[in-house]
Length: 240
Image (tube, rainbow, N blue to C red):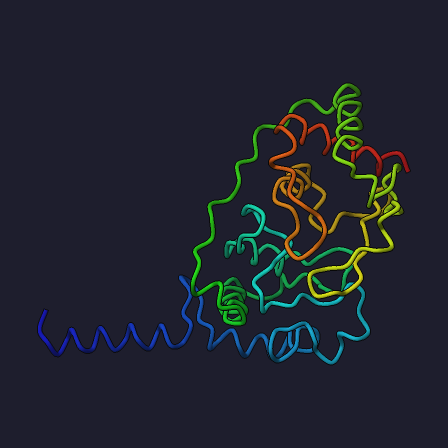
């Protein structure tokens, strides 16, 4: 390649890097969308301290540590772009985070590129592959009963309560990584924040929720036990 063309190409690459260009999104464009749609809750610095944050429960996500709840990646890992895309597009039930489906795909990708600039983890780490979700076994009385046993074995009731109402003995003491009080979810009413599909619930059990007391059970239960647990937890809501 001629020296002039090589210099131009290198210069263009440097400009893309400086701009925070993700694979399909540009942070410079995403910053504008963030200022319009996100800053009031998540703050100018992405620390979850926007001027509306004081009125919100749960509090807005702090992006600065790269700790995200809703991921397909293993516990402790940064999320994949598609994880962030799903959260922004669909929103989170029972929170102030609305679905942003009205934004174009390009707007969402640009926004993700900018959100990732708040934590140095995204520049230093590559996200792990998404966990594998095995086929779901039959959801029947036998599976639900097995799931109830797993619920007791891994002590889900300590936080979520014996009946899954979010009233376990530890529920009042729970805090997130930033010291903010956090509620154990009530499985008996409403939709689930992560999504209502069985696969969504399985994913949470096996990845945990980064920044919260909710651990990953990938080393504690087998895939079959996790599926039984999914069926039991979903059965709690169906009874009411």
